[in-house]
Length: 245
Image (spheres, one colour):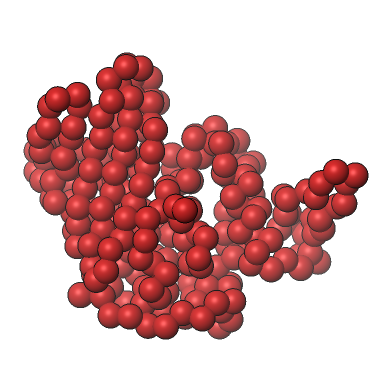
């Protein structure tokens, strides 16, 4: 979505212990004329595949304009590139570029008015961000990752307008904790959503407390189906959400 932030970003890009988080530090959640899946409105306030003896290559190159790919190939290509990358942290610049190219191509197959599509609701894993420190804020910075190992990043979108983001982690390798946010979703137009989050809640061991103030994010939904959702923040960060099963 656009931003101030998966329709929905996971966590504010910057955690502030006093006052409001800047809207520009957004996080998570263009339409096209063709839609591979039916999506009814709801209200809310090759590189070709090469055959090998024992398998099929899943990666798809988008750099060659002669290659014709469909949404299933593009989805498989994106997921194959981001899986095991610690949500983008471990990818090279070239791999980030490949993900961006596949996402750009895939958005041509996005349903019309994706913010009204009921597929938006459900539980989602945040599997990639082009700016890896964006979802999770300071916990995902280079220094933060030394002390906090991310276990899960989950975003739950509940009808009609509730968004819940959670980052669970292990601190110093032995102390489990999580940071969670709850917010209200508002459709700005047929592509962009805005979420206003309450102050973050931190749980570490037996401690539980809130800190900081409200935060606001905007996100453009550029593609959605029954498997993945793509979003773009106000500053252009690309997010990939995979539906939990």
